[in-house]
Amino acid sequence: MRFSNSIFLLFLLAVPVLIFFFITAWKKKKKLMETFGSLELMEKLTGSVSVEKQRLKVILLVAAFFFMVLAVSGPQIGTRMVEVKRRGVDIIIAVDCSKSMQAEDIKPTRLVKAKRELSTLISKLNGDRVGIIAFAGIAFRQCPLTLDYNAAKMFLDIIDTDLIPYPGTEMDKAINLAIESFSRKERKYKALILLTDGENHSKGMMASVNEAKKEGIKIFTVGIGTPDGEPIPIHDENGNTTGYKKDKKGAVVMSRLDEKSLREIALKTGGRYFRSTPGGSEIENIYEEISGMDKKQLQSKLASQYEDRYQYFVLLVLILLIMEFLVTEYRKEVYEV
Image (cartoon, rainbow, N blue to C red; front, side, top):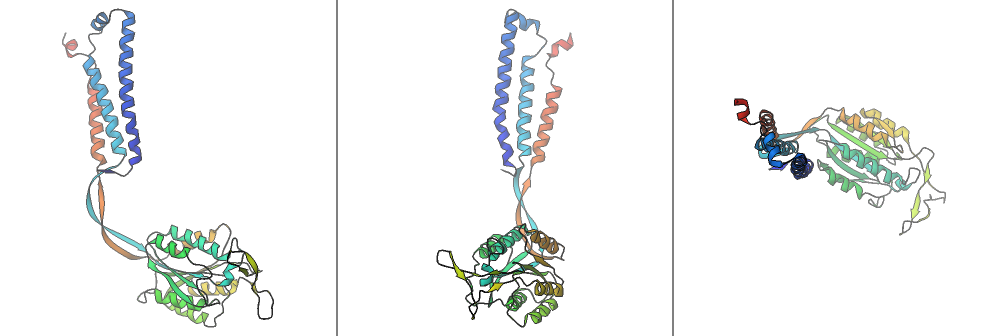
């Protein structure tokens, strides 16, 4: 036997307390009777009351409380095999991990903020498969489509700006890899979430977006950064800022959020563009958008399910309470006189 709400079993500690209370009350009653006269005389005067029946009523009440606690604790005895079906959509998350994501116009950094938001989104998913792509100058599959959300968050956590040695932000490569990661047999149930500052360095991006549209992939873009821009810090081995990235002419490079291209990508595929906010409200909006998409059956398997048996204990409680109600405290011979 197991209990689905085992926390309620703590109320069983009240059983010995109840027993102690009734015993104490009984002894106190006897002492009170002795103060009025001889105990033997008082028992004769109250002879119509059956002490045995009084004790029986107490036992029935305590037993009813005991089984009531067991009932609310959710007793489960035995198992049965049930078919478990999971429905959802396939979601690929593409994370920009280029050096520009080290900019601190979004605290603590663009990449850290993006990872936190994505972890929150993954925690909200229920039945959807999720995969992760990391990209900069190239893109690679960090985590294949999976229903194991803990594993997905683990792969997400290890992404940093040193993960890909190829500089740049090639969004078309991330989109192309996402297209390959989805099933080519379907033209729906697919969503790509693209988190980037939008500074695209490739010329074939719109061709990749058009191909994603043909495959029925909705792209939701999230802009990380600010239009005003921020210099890209350079850190030493201890994580201290030692300077800022400069171009060939020696000028400090300013990394700016390119919202125009991100809006265009989302609009082209039927998705939506969101700018990252301190409160992370865009994650809730993306989750609502994905929840409203058509869903497919992603998994069907047999699983062992415990059988609830609380109803038998409830029935026992009712029987005990009815018995307690029917039992009178008076001796039977009193009614025969």
